[in-house]
Each structure stands twice: as structure tokens, then as C-alpha cells.
Image (cartoon, helix red, strand yellow):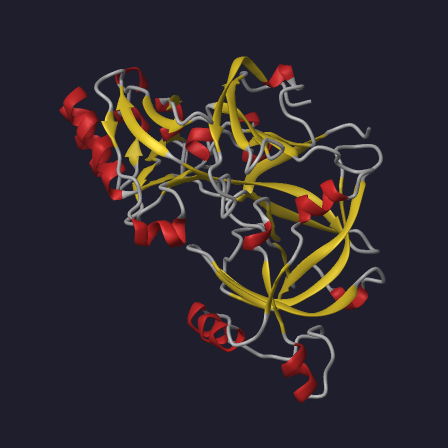
Length: 408
């Protein structure tokens, strides 16, 4: 059985989100890619990868058009070799890759692309075969379209694509597990400390707070990365890593139940929360956000006032004493639908030395949507294992993270 890979990651390129380095195609073109459990597509910016110079590349009739909350892109899908390594012999898999021929500026921050770590349903591609035949083409690369690099243009192009057949493509991580001599277990894990780049040193890329680990193929075996027992949260659907958020609690005070989705919203969102490594803040549904703020106000009105101010402005670090702030606990359903607590500490929902040294940002935000996105500020407290081997959709496991400085 091949060993699990402990892959160094950093939040510097993704401006808070974490990236790993991969090598693409016959030339091993390097790319820093976001690690995102909220999506399933493997996409690389056309500035970082040229399919025309890749002898391993195979063309397809597919194209993808993806619109995120923070960006959008469209382009052809090819197949090629993707290699990842933590030193020694790299692991390589031949898989689908979308090339972002047209894209919204700043789409991936300073990263080169994204690896989606969710399930097949989020990796749909359009089959352009009927259209290509009409224009005397057989494949989508080279890209036969010229679209303005704007969100509006990409949305308009998607209306054209939506008239074409769709197929689910096998995502990168699924391809890794299906090739038995690579990753033999459908498990991966994150070890992180921050949800914003720490600017507290003269060289942020070397700051241990801005580094982490991504483990492919294992989880609990890496006992140096956590302490104590795991808390297991049930994944209720594979649209995303869907979970059921039951209540919130501040400073051990009264629990406040949160809304479950009504029938209409359940059709499109499935559950009231997801766990998302690609979210740099806790994007809370309005009732959850209101419950957090009301509980903070009951705990200490002055703290609630500061948190409200922080929605619009950075706060000087000198104005904050983290010892005054409470843990904010989210109670999620386990496999038996019993509530289990997961807590954000003040040091993770406040990010010091961000966006600049001496400043702080508050990472609990109102999403204005029906679903709470439980992102890095929660994961930063835990060694987080995404275990897809538990039927039917898996579990996400959380154990208290060990201190920084052991990333070897």
C-alpha cells in the first residue's frame, strides 16, 4: 500500500485560502492550486499552463463554465497528467483539467488555479460535440471562442452552453482513489492555523502561521498533528460536504436553535450548512449570524459593538484583548443526529495582523443566504479529516490541533 502524502501548503497565494503545488503534463509545468472542498473542478489559468506544449495532453469535446461567489471562468477541458509530491517519488494521475481561456480578473487570487475536492455532481462539463460538428471542429482545444473577461460575459456564454448536453466528469481526488496504486483510501485531511495571511513578520511566506499540511490518503494515523479524540460530523449529502447545523452557543451560555431549510430551499441546497476549506470566513445564514451577535451582546455588549464595527472596518489589534472574548460553538449533527460541539476560539474568528500588521479582521460574516458556510476559521481549531469511506456520504472528523512549528 502506498504511503499517504503530507503535502506542504500555504495561504499566501490564495490570500487566506490554502494552496498546494502540482506539476502538469509532460513538461511538469508548476502551478499553485487552491484546495477547495466547496467545488470539484480542477482548473488551471491559461497563463500558467499551455496545453499546446504538453505531449501528454489529450483533447476532448468538453467545456466548463464556472461561476463562484468570488470569480468566474470558462474554457476547454483536456486530459493530462497531474503530479503531486511531498519529496521523493511524485504521484501522478491522468485526469480531466479545465483551462481557463476566459476568466474574471483575480479569479484565483495569486494562485494559478483550483483543485476541487468535493464530489462528481459539482464537476459537470458541457459536451460541445453537436456544435463543434456544425463549425467543422471536433474538439474544444484550441478554444474556438473569444469572450470578454468579465462576469457578465461569462454568464451570458453559460446560457449558450446550458442548451448542450452535460456529463459528470471524474474529479481529481476520485481519480486518485480509483487508480489503486496511488491513494488507496478515500480520505484527506487539513492542518491549518490561519484564515487570513499573517503580516506579523517581515517575510509572510516563511511564517509558520501561514503554512500547513494537506494529507492525501490518511487521517487519524498522523497523531503528531492533533491531540485527544475525534468529534465526528455526519455528511448528509454529496452535493457539497453538507451538514446539519443544529444550534450555536457562546461562552457556554444558552444554546440557540437555528433554522432548518424549508422544502423549496432544500431542493437546491439540501442542508443548512456545508464545511468548506475554500471559505476564508464563516459565512453564516442570517438567523445564525443574528444568534451569534445576540449571544455576544448578552455576554458583553461592548464586544458585540466591536464585532459590529468590524463588519465594515479593520480593528486595531491594540483595541482587542482576546482574553475578553468567548469561544463561539457550533453544534452539528453526528451520524445518530445528536448534537456535537465544534468551537471557534477568539484567535481564529479574529485574525490578527491582517490585512496589515497591527490590524485585525472579524471572520464571522452574514452570508445573506439560506446556508451557513463553515470555513477556515472553524477548521483552524482542528486537525480536520474528510473521511469519504463511511456510507453513504462520509463524515468529517475534528480533533484539537497541535501547536504550530511541527510541519515536517
